[in-house]
Image 1 (cartoon, rainbow, N blue to C red):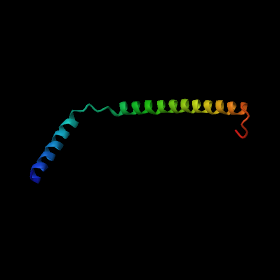
Image 2 (image 1 turned 90 degrees about the vertical axis):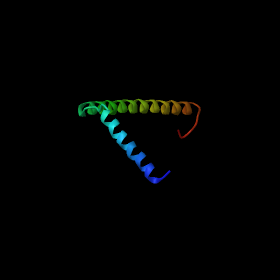
Image 3 (image 1 turned 60 degrees about the vertical axis):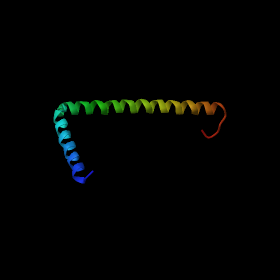
Image 4 (image 1 turned 120 degrees about the horizontal axis):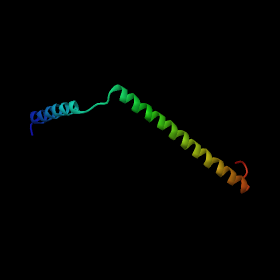
Length: 73
């Protein structure tokens, strides 16, 4: 296939892509800010929860090891 044929296909691809991008229903800046705030808040809550679970398991194993007589834990 000659190079010109491939180039025309690429031009057509980008032309179609530009047309499809125009059809997308983009969120407003306010919607974007709201969704970002929700994601940040949920990430913080999930991080705190996982930190608490980790701390709980750490303490549980520390108590178990102390009960079994393992020194230095």
